Image 1 (cartoon, one colour):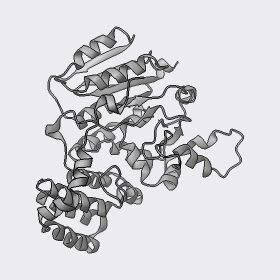
Image 2 (cartoon, helix red, strand yellow):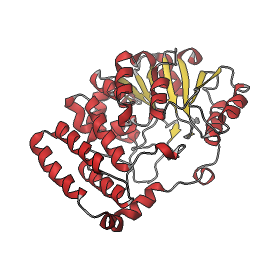
Image 3 (cartoon, one colour):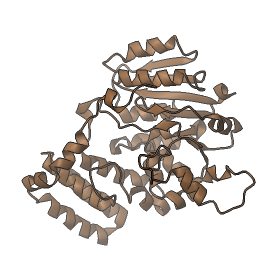
Length: 360
């Protein structure tokens, strides 16, 4: 029954070694017999050979290879709603690690067909804790469950608007991790697809779907165990790597996809950036200075950042923010380099594949 309900769609580009590791793990998982489609964005490396290797291992593997590289975000949108024909879709990246030691509850959730989405990872509140004092998403859900339920695991069922009250902006950060949830395929309708394509220049097209989960108050299930272990995203095409200020600008613009009631939650915190704070305004300012320290032109980005803050916060606060960023713009690049070059170097470090993880 699982094989009839779930389809896996794997997005890949120029990471054949990572792709091989991902497919190796799925070949030894309960999801092996599900239909899987690999969308290869015209990789110039050994990706076709890796795909050919696993076509002999999987019973239901289809490979789509673009004639040209259409870009990472358009490829994500294509995989989100234009490929899968099954009831549920699990959109996968090509560079993460997986834990299939406990999957029965996820399979049961899929086969019940009662959930709009199944959350199988929470990258900012992980079950696989890096710090023993961290609370996992499961811990937080359990501690916020005040009802006396007959089923002790019922706290894992939750409507998205209730989840937002508990985890706040963490929800939108985690929705940016495309592999962290399984969704009903029909929920990626034309409206979501169009909004997602329109948001491709803002780097986060998948937040079009996040907006729908909030506005329609989807009913979700959080897995007992995280099936996916988030890994640092390696650069597969340096030519198209975005600067930090572009990243912030993209996130702020993407918040406009969210209904006004929840919009502030979508942008109030920014994660995984070289800063000691998560406040959106301070993070954006620091990222601009880090770019200046690195010799990256920030003038156009600063103008765009000011414009989006006018939209998000209104004219009065927008005016003060404009003055704030115009002041940052005149700070000498050498001074920014003295203050923030170490952050930039740390952000740009690439940990090699073998050092990062070994294939399971």
